[in-house]
Image 1 (tube, rainbow, N blue to C red):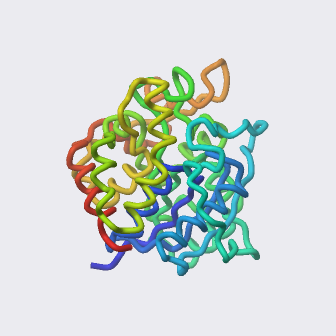
Image 2 (cartoon, one colour):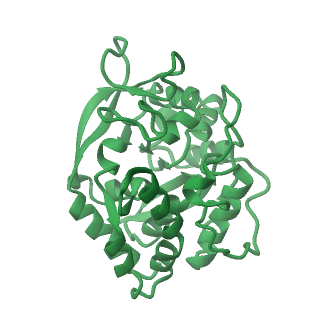
Length: 311
């Protein structure tokens, strides 16, 4: 089996760290790079965190490329440190990396250059705001015809949002960019709150990873307490939603998900910024494979198995 080449566009982030660990532990995937973006924290922090995660996983072979520091159409908003901690990695105190991000290119340009060099091969996996992808499309409008697929963690089709009543956090962080991306006409799978809110790692599930002994399991166990406390205090949940890792799980086992081909329009005003609207879209709008169902137990078993592997 030839591994699927992927670029993970990320804003680490506790759940991003889990997703990265799962991807790197999966022989089905060839992680070409982590490109970073604003979101769970400012981009200099998310970039530093991407390097830290790779150090902890002993994967210094994977480059990190810094990207957009704010949305394309509006001012930045302060990071939600109450969700992921002051450092966005659960305030564990991981030491800074001894290596640096790639210096001679930004994330959008890196994405364009990599996809151009391997037309039809590369899957883009944005698990943060979609700013870098929108900027990449601005650089290369043909990008939509050159990628293999885009697997987006974001949106909420038929369920409420998690940052406003209508919007999911990644899409809300840059709705103008998301509208560009969903309208570009490339093959897209949307892994949104319709399914990620069902993929819940309970406190017991996380505790069971303690004895696994792998760096991947260690990251999840060590960073989880801040995220657990947030969910316990805000919605009474005794666990964490595996948002970003669910997008990786779809690439490994798409049969565990049910999707519908739907047009997706992103609201950029009228008090519903970031809403991913699937009903009443304009005629001719590109269709998106929107995940609407999931075998959550099987996905959690898959994530558990991969986190217990040596990366």
